[in-house]
Length: 343
Ligand SMILES: NC(=O)N[C@@H](CC(=O)O)C(=O)O
Ligand SMILES: [Zn+2]
Ligand SMILES: [Zn+2]
Image 1 (cartoon, rainbow, N blue to C red):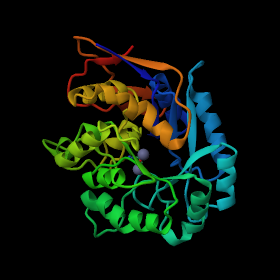
Image 2: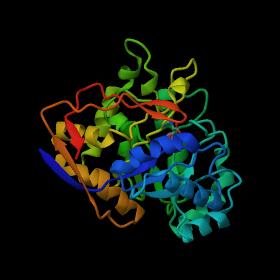
Image 3: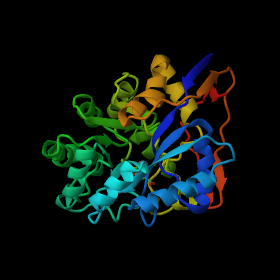
Image 4: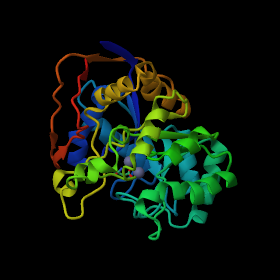
């Protein structure tokens, strides 16, 4: 069986920097035409000039003749200057601004503690039509980690959107039924869904031993949530699309008494999505999810090239890890045999 799609986009990707960037950038460039590049480097990408310089480092890390167009983001801090943001947007350097609640996830220490402090930037963004991408989890100690997304929607996101109804928001890597319901029932808001959250629930991570390579944030939830994400992904809803959140960490940082959050899925995402959409009887909706909906939301043209997926009789072998100058990185293991491959 063959499936021909417009070349897809990954609307949420971590490429890191230095030796890790060199190791992982070709993995995304192989299948994807564009990706929205997350700014949570250490130190983070906070100014337009830094985003432009980071983009050059990404381009330099790509294989020759790779056609891959990194869409840059800025990391929102309490000191972000609205004029710098506007200029970066108007000059085409950035596609979005990313909000990390301080302490919510990997490299989020410079994120936002007091939301009132970023209102002037958000007002400017609403005015000029620049999208805010959100890591949607509260960081309050009292709130259980499995509830942090739902509580964020109720106590932070919804009030913020009532205050700034014109602000375009992308809820990144939604992991709950609450998240997809909120997005699909609203206006002016979109969401990305990762590959791994369509495949694993919290049991995969915790039953029979703790599996650090399934640990990511927001953490995988109950099965009912995974099913709601699947239903949303295959629904054809125009404001629901792929953001892999492929987030490489070296194995020694993952297999650690305090392991880092992040799943690396750039290499095998497209075959896995074909598998999932086939299981859901929705192969005809895959192109919308990976190639059309995100481009429409961000107002960019559709990619010109094609990606061909083929399903054979034999199991397709994927590497267990990829080697990078920053150490080996374990590839997401879906836990089932895959027969789809990119031709
Ligand atoms: N998703 C993750 O678990 N980790 C991401 C950060 C993020 O997207 O929250 C990372 O940068 O490693
Ligand atoms: Zn995140
Ligand atoms: Zn991420």
